[in-house]
Image (tube, rainbow, N blue to C red; front, side, top):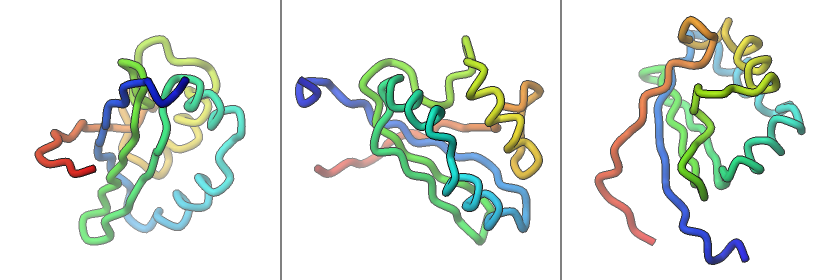
Length: 111
């Protein structure tokens, strides 16, 4: 029963390169079904990414039923690595092409 799972809220920010917002949105509109399924299978749901056009920051929010989240860089599967490699030209990335991703602290929540 999924309703009994304790969901953890997780928010983070990433950095989009200037002028790449339309390409970023286009690629996510065509997200690979196997990547989407893998993210779901890892316990992530209710996942949204927002763009702040004044700062070019991407703000992401997701709920996780397990300890991990979509930004974990340990034991990365080949599908995620391939996605990171494809996205590296339009985002600030680490040496392994994972997006530079900074967790955000929750200061307020209302159900």
